[in-house]
Length: 385
Image (cartoon, rainbow, N blue to C red; front, top):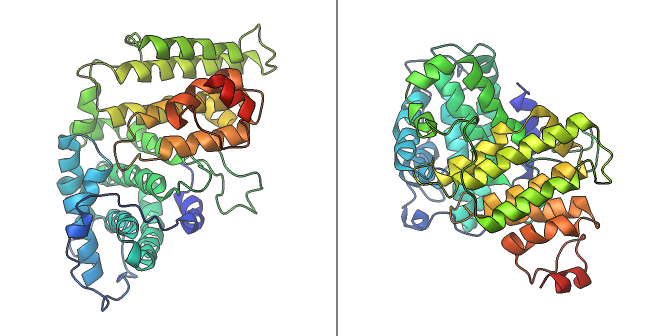
């Protein structure tokens, strides 16, 4: 697994304050302490193994934990049994595994920095402090995953991706699949791809599947029974089907695309999985919409992920179409604006010449009236409308 420590400590500096409220009830939560609150208390002796005695809580820590259990855990999950899991069982695990508790407190502080803009800097500092400590202590745990710590490690990786996603500023380029045009030495986003954080949870899943599938996280996996990757694609909306099917022409044998056959086949498989995601979003009794949308991140192959990281045009077109899925769950505060942000970033990277394929996601996600971005000419937009 990629070192989350090197990947995240530097990237945490990318967080920006966001004045838009993420939780309607958040302003009704009375802070336990006001201006007298000091910085979060961090114990220098925390261990990544279970410990019957936990470090002392500061008043701020208790405020953060209260917010997480009352509101924060509901912000990034869209079905009740999983919300209860993260509100209760995961917190119980966190009292045994300090690296998980620090990650919970880091996420809660990040959420509060966005819901309470007048104290954004205060919560942001607490979030960064807890995040760094969490990552430091997680390293030894992830190097030796076993039946005793696999649930805490899995919870940590899911919350880490949640943290990364939440911290993404909608006014800055999105780094879910690719990063800025500079070397790792120059970039404060080393290796740049947030998708690798999400896929990191799969490594924990793979190594400890037997224990995880029978444990408390079973509620996350049970809804997928009967919806295996081998099952046929469920019926799509006719318009969705038309555009998704036509996308393959961007790299077909009759196109001007010059990528190797193996990569074309990998793109075909990724498109097939994306069509399956669109079908599941319409299916009755399917897993929750957010679970469905996020599942594509773990389903795409390493080869396609690498193509996205290298900004291969044909792979970026897949990202543009994936933005439609993200946009369709934007009613969740966790996802609000993320589809638009990722699509704008993707269009800027693509540049001109892809209008044949980008017109549809632009209309769905940004609207026909959209005039922004380096890639779109006024003439094209006028023609699209």
